[in-house]
Structures are given as C-alpha cells and as structure tokens.
Image (cartoon, rainbow, N blue to C red):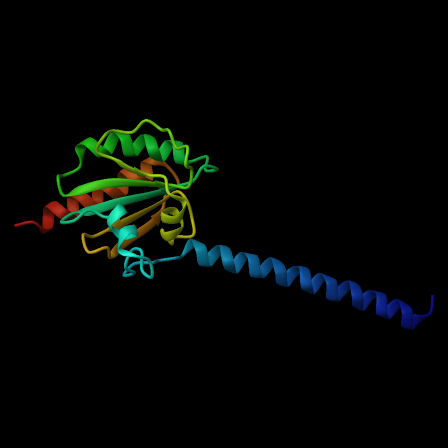
Length: 169
C-alpha cells in the first residue's frame, strides 16, 4: 500500500471518529438541556385555546399537574403518591394527572382530575415524564420538576403546602 492511500484511510477514520464524537456531544447537550429545563413563568397552554388551560387549571386555586406517560416505569410509584396526597391537600390545591394514554385506568381518588387527552398532554411542555408543574389560578407555571419517585413528589408537595401556610395571614 502506498503512503498516500494509507494517509487517506487514516484521515477518513479520524473524520468518522470526529463525527461520532460530535453526535455524542450533541446528544449530551440535549440531555443536559432537558434536565435543566425550567419553564417557570410560562403561561400554561400558551398559544393554545382557553379550553386547554381551563381543562387543567383550577379557578381560584393552585393546580399540581402531574404529567405521566404510558411507557414510564416510575409513573406507577408517582401515581400511588398522588393517591395518598390528594385527600390531604388544602381546599385551594388540587391534583390534575395528565396522561397520553386514552385507556388510562389507574385507581385514583375522586379529588384527582384525570385528563387523558393526548393534545393536552403535549401542551404540558416539560420535556420529561413523570413531571410536576405547579400552576396558579391564572395559568402561570410557578414551578416545574422531574419526578424520579413518589417520594420526590411527596417532598415537593409538602414544601408547597408548608410555604402556603407560612405566607397566609
């Protein structure tokens, strides 16, 4: 093999490795972007009609929106925590579970609104599931968090309720 052919082959391999490394870095950047997604201050259902917002939010109250999907292995644990927490929430707080599964059939207390509309599921713009969004009565997202377990949901909800009690006169 002549030296020119060997150099071209080596350079071709190096270019292929650079492309692979660039693709891997791009994927990592997208994962980090998703992990640090904030979404706070965004009006829920922005760019959509008022029906999307009114289907999820509660007038004169805070809505704890839990986004789940049918392929989520952690969602079962999160839904169990929702079932335990829902009866204990103050009167001006409520849960809304938004699922992309039209056949969603999990047993939840009557206080929990279950929304099975895929269009509404897509309008919950956090790029991860399960997720918790805390939405005020005007539809403004005041907090978002990915949920890795039911315990994470319990922790966030307890802090939210405690903060509410501290700010009330």
